[in-house]
Image (cartoon, rainbow, N blue to C red; front, side, top):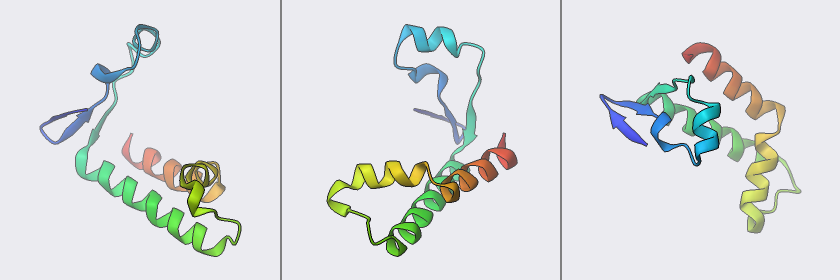
Length: 86
């Protein structure tokens, strides 16, 4: 990601030509500090969620975070962020 005037610009870093064609009209720019805040909110939510879930398996952290990302709590965090910032 390129930081340009404290903005994150995603367009240049699409993984393939197909992605570029699909998303060529999509202009995503986020203010760096807001993106950092979003990541912090998601991580705080994950730690809160995982501390209350006895089935959380930290040896499979990527799976645990993946499951959290599908959870209503995380979806709400993301929805609120994008509603307020896009």
